[in-house]
Image 1 (tube, rainbow, N blue to C red):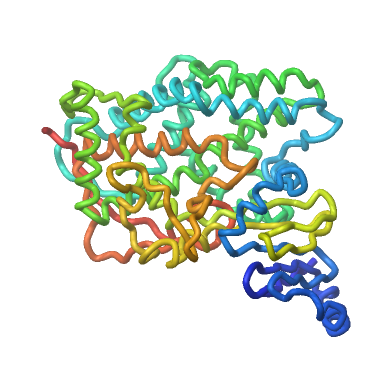
Image 2: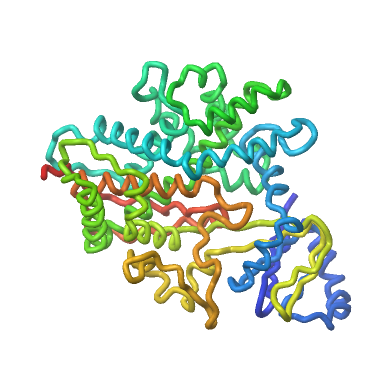
Length: 478
C-alpha cells in the first residue's frame, strides 16, 4: 500500500503529519473544502486537518513541551513501542495477558542501569576498554597509524560494551568473531529505519536472515557459558525463564534488542563527540588537561605505560568533557518523542490554547528543532565544547522568548520514554574519550570535508555521519 506524507503547518504551535493511502488522499481532496468550512471557527494556531488514515501532531514550541510530557496517563509511549519493537527485533509482544506481569518486570529491570548499579558497570566498562586498547592498539609501536574514525570508535566501543553488558566467554578474555558480529549488526542497523516504519522484513533483502543470525548469538544455551554477565542481563534472563511460552529464540531476540539499544545510538554518539574534539585542538587540549587534573587530584600522575582507572565520581567531575559530549549530542541528535492518545481529551498547551485529541492520535515532539534554535543557542550550527559550562559548573539556564526552558537538551527522550540507559551511555563515552586522549596523539587528516549527518535516520536517535573521517594516531610515550 502506498503512503502519502502530507505536512500541514498550524501557525504558532504545531504541525500535523498525515499518513494516508493514495486512494484516501484522492477522496480527501473532495472532502477538504467541506471540512474547512465546518472548521472555519477553530483557532487556526492549533488547528488540525482530519482525514482517513493515521495522523500525528508535532508540537514545535519547546515552551509547550511540559504540557505534553506531563500527560503520562492520557498520552502513552509504551503502546507504540510494544507494537513496533517486536516486529523489528523478532520477538512476541509481552504487553498483555499472554505473559502476565512480564512487561512490568522487564521495565523494572532497567533500574539496574542506574543509581548504585552504575558503579560495577562503570568499573567493568573501564576494564574492558583497557583490555581492547591494550591488545589492539597499545602494542609499543610509536609510529603513526591511519584509519577511519567512525570505524575505530565503533569497533572499540562495540566490543567493550558487549563484554560489559553480556560478559566474557567461558575461558575469559574476548569473544571470537566480534568483527563479524559487528558487520552483521551494521547490516541490520542499515535496515532499521525501514523496520521501524513497519516495512515487512521480507521486502528488505537478506535482512531477515541477518537478524536470525544475530539472534542466534544470544540463545540461552550459549549465554549460560559466559561469565561476568551484568546484573541487568542476568535479571532479564531469569524473567524470561519464568515463562514457558517464550521459546529460546524469543528470549534470544529480547537480548539482541538490548544489544541494539546499547550500541545503536552510542556508537555514532561516540564518533561525533570524538570528531568534534579532534576538529578543535584547543578544545581537545582543554578536555585532556581536565582529565589529567582530576587524576592528579586523586593522587595519580598519569603514565602511559600503566592502566588507568577513573571512578564514577571522577567521571562526574569532568564538566568540560560532559559539556563537549552534550554539545555533540545537541548537534547530532534527531530523535522523535512519540505519545499515543489513550482517550479523547483536550490537550491544554498553555493558559490560552488547547487542542482536541482523539483516541489513537499520535502526539510527537521533535527536539532537533529545539537543539538548533538560534533563539536558544547562539550560532547553533557551531560546536562549542564549553557551551554547557557556566562559572565552573554545569549550565542549565537556557531560555526562549524570555522564558526559562524546562527542557533544553533532549537527546535521550523525555518523561516515561526517556532512555533508562542514558547514564551508562554518557559514562562509557566519557571513558572512551578519556583513554583516547590520555594514551594517544590524534589528528584529523588534511584535505577532507566536514562530515554531514545522514538524514535517513531522522527521528530515530543519533544521526550517523554521511561518510567516515580519515584520522591518524600514535601512542604517547610520556
